[in-house]
Image 1: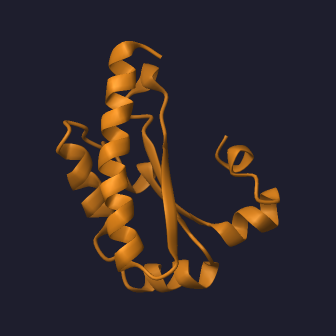
Image 2: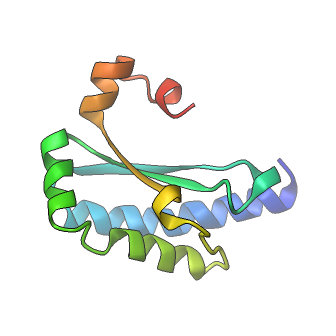
Amino acid sequence: MRKTDKKTDNQIRIVLTEVCDHALAAYPGFQWLTHLVDYSHFPESLKVVCVFDTNTNLSHFYEAGKPGLDAFIVTKLATIGIRLSKPSAQIAYDTEENCERENKGKWAHRLG
């Protein structure tokens, strides 16, 4: 990873921490989020994964129309000059429940 990539990654982590703190307070069952990126294809390769505890809580979140979380992520990334070209493809949702069932709780394998 180049020095500029490390700087960008740190900026992404800072704004996504703010998103995570907001989501923890605002959305029942929200647990954590992470990002994946290949800096040789940045920013198109940037993907944000938001994780809920159960499929039930994720379903309630979807039924409520994903109340602004996608837009909040897009807005926060824009504050550091990152524009998502396809937010619907670059922001994903998953659950601890699915990872446990399908990958025996191994997130590195699931996200890999």
